[in-house]
Length: 419
Image (tube, rainbow, N blue to C red; front, top):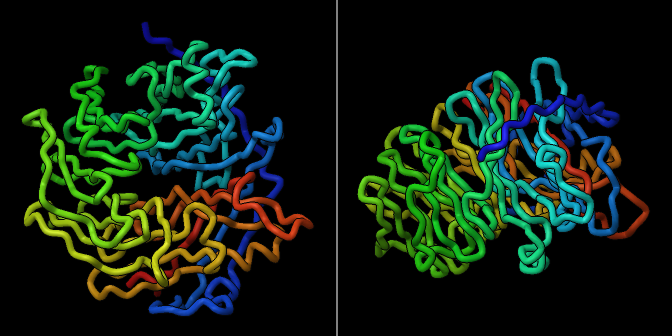
C-alpha cells in the first residue's frame, strides 16, 4: 500500500550568500595551461552555502551526488545528503530564482518515520526528474559497506518518491528493487518510463510511471559502473560494460542488445551524457574524462578528445537550448580545485573549450573551498547555469576538504559569451 505524506515546508535562512562578479573569475590560475580559451567577460555568480545542517557525528559528510531539475514552475530542485549509513538522511530543496530563496521541501527521514538507529538514506544519487507536474527521485545509501548488515536488520534498499508540484505532497512509492541501491536514472517522458540501475548487481530497470510498476529488469551482464545512461530520440536506452562496449534496451521489443561500438580511451565506461540533440546526436563523457559524440542513428562514435587539459572525471553535462554548446564542470570528485574549478563551455561546431569561470580562487578568498559538482543544469533560455558544488569552509588545516558543506552556485552567463 502506498503511503501519502504531506510535508511542511521549511525556509532555510542563508547566513552565507556570496556574490562574485570580478575579473578574478576569468583569470587563469597559475600553472593551468592547455588548449582552451577564457571568457572575456566574467559572469555574475551567486553562491548559497547551505545553513542549518546538523553536525551529526564523525561519519556525517554533507554532500550532493545527483543532478537537479529545473521544473515547469521555473524553480530549481536539488538534493543533498549527510552521507551516513545508520541515521542517514537526505533533503530536497527548492530554489526560487525570482525571490532568491532556498527552501527545504523534503526531509526523507522525517517523511518515512525513520527511527533513531535505523539504517537511513544518506544520499540522493540519481537525478531528479519531472513528469506530469510531479518530481520523481530515488534515495541511495550513504555507507555501502554497511548495507549487507543493514538488510538483515530490515533495510529495504533505495526508495522511490513522487513530489506533487501543485499539492506539494510527497508519496513514497517504495523500494522498486528491494535490497538494491539506485545510483542513476534517466527519464523518457514520451513513453512515461523512468530507467534505473540496480546496484550492485547492475540490472537495468524500466519503471512505468503510469502503471507504477517495473516493466523490465535485466542486462546486468552488459553494464558496469552504473553511473550513466544515454537516451536516444527513438526511446532506445544506451549504456556500457566494463570495457566501454555499448549496448541498448529497446522498449518496443523489451530486450537488451549489445552492439560492436566502443567508447574511446582507456577508462572508457560511460560516466555522463547530454540529452539528444534535434538531429539525434548525444554528447558524452567517459570515466577518464574523454569527450565523445555518439550518433545512434548512424551507429557511430566520434572521439572529441579530453574534456579539459588532460581530461578529468566529470559527472554531469548539459546541452544548451540552442544546441550550440555543452556545459560541464570537470573534476567532480574534488580534483576540480587543482585546475581552478573551471566551468567549461564546449562549442559543438568548432570544438573550442571556453572557461566561463574559474570558481575556486575567487571563493577561496571569501572563505569557502570549492570542490567539484555532480549537479549542473541550464535554464530554458540558455542564460543561467544552476549547479550544486561540494566544498567546505576554509579552516586552518593545511589540507582543505572538498566535501562537508555543499553550495548552490548560480552562474549568469554573459550574452556576449553565448553568441
